[in-house]
Length: 111
Length: 111
Image 1 (cartoon, rainbow over the protein chains, first blue to last red):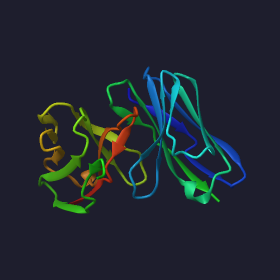
Image 2 (cartoon, rainbow over the protein chains, first blue to last red; image 1 turned 60 degrees about the vertical axis):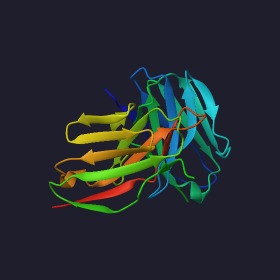
Image 3 (cartoon, rainbow over the protein chains, first blue to last red; image 1 turned 90 degrees about the horizontal axis):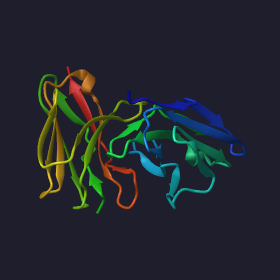
């Protein structure tokens, strides 16, 4: 079973809103990731959690705030986003072999 | 020099033929290599991974790795219209427990 689930599938939010993206995996994987993918571009790594410890990508604006409540759950809290933040947000998990399995993604539109 | 490079295509291949996708990487220390398939509007799906020089076969897919020349390729035999997608090459990100992707090759299988 290589299933990673993400909610919601679609999200439209205003620039003053606060929202959260959720990700869950039940494969016992030790690492979880957030990626951002713009149209016709490859996924770009945002954050990594390994054994629930955060590795920060310094180029990610502070309006994106990750959280790992436990080894199966990963959240991405969004606040004061800009229209250019509209993208597909992908969650992935890995057992440490390097092989990463992606969830279906949340398509975010910032108006 | 970009870390992972792919020809963006589109690469058009007739149905039943062999599709050949190529990828070069800059970090000689890379030890693992991944191929993802991404259909339009969907998330990336891991289809092949390879760690050692040589060929690795899985069904209609063959991954080839040449570390001395720093390239990895993906061959798809007996191409089907359902193989039409973007194929992303990925390597572990230097200094981070994530993946760095190439821009992807858009493959079109012509019936």
